[in-house]
Image (cartoon, rainbow, N blue to C red; front, side, top):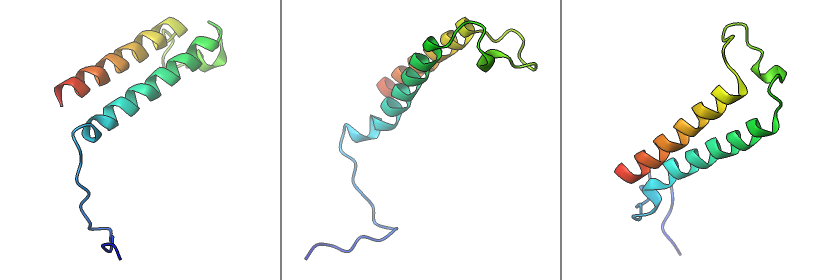
Length: 77
C-alpha cells in the first residue's frame, strides 16, 4: 500500500507548479475582464457613491494592471 497522507504531509513541488498560483490568479483577472467587457458603460455595477469616478474603462485598466502584475510575479518567482 501507499504512504499515509495526513494534514502535515509535505507535497514536493515540481518546477512548474510553484508558478501556478500566479497563473491562476492572472486567469481569474482575465475572466473578470471579460465579464466587465460585457457590461454597458452605465451599468449599476459601476454605480458606487464612494467611487464616483469608477467607470467601465477604469475597471478594465485596473484589471489589465492586475494581469500584468501576475505575469511579472510569475516571471520573477
